[in-house]
Image 1 (cartoon, rainbow, N blue to C red):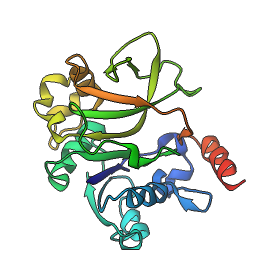
Image 2 (cartoon, one colour):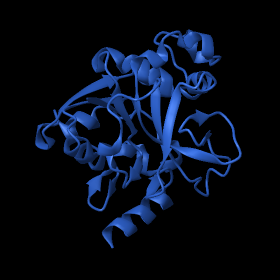
Image 3 (tube, rainbow, N blue to C red):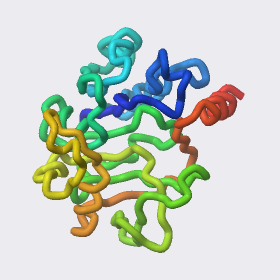
Length: 232
């Protein structure tokens, strides 16, 4: 199985830290956030990793190289100076990922979730890891029903953890489900959530609820809090 790490964001809420360092390369407990993911990917048997880049893209190969130190092969999917959003970033990376299901993780989250628990061949088009709503995201993203299907809405909404397994076929016909203005650009720039929601209505998105540790490292304070927790 291959993996895709989303690392192209501008990190605007993390400024001034991200003025000179892309968010996934900010360190917690002595190593960059993205290295925590690379170690877990290697431990669960992944051998090829695609890292999508845009903001300060040149820093990633300098910091990570070709991945050999983790027993990985890292390739970079450069999106240009403007990130392509989640859907556009995935579409841009598909030629490097191939036709099989792949693991996806956001480069700016930290979790104790064991990547080895993820299905290698998900039911439907995707398997999403969900977590309890953090204080900064009180509305949640999606709901998870008792059959393990992810729904657009429901009585108990959870937050998408930025972690899951996806089939490339999720993006087949994506234009029918996207109203983003950037979808008409070349390369297209669009969000993944509307495409996921469209397939949720058809019962094709599955998921699970992770009740362990998870942090969206979106602000300098949350970065400092995570660093203190992991270094203590």
